[in-house]
Image (cartoon, rainbow, N blue to C red; front, side, top):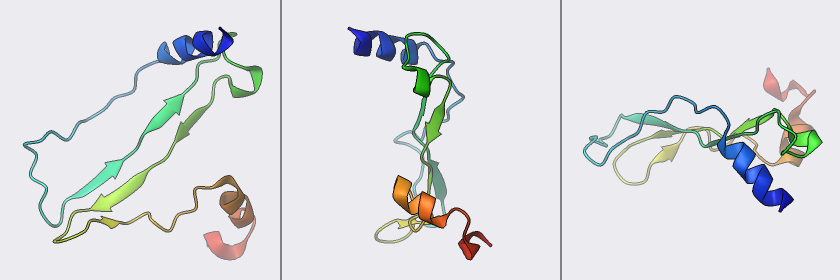
Length: 93
């Protein structure tokens, strides 16, 4: 029951602006797309306290080319332990 209330509250979160690539959008070499799924949780009592009001977005930039696409952000760390290992190091400079 708590999980269902949390999901309902999450669906009530303010919608964000989106632009969709449709099937008739030409995907030709040189086109660069950003793929950015996101999850935003409202500051609501229906959400567990430690998760209220947060947003998470994972973004990938992808270049269309002949053959396989090139994920430009493919080397960016995503796993929590990878990000934590990078924070505070010289790697960001």
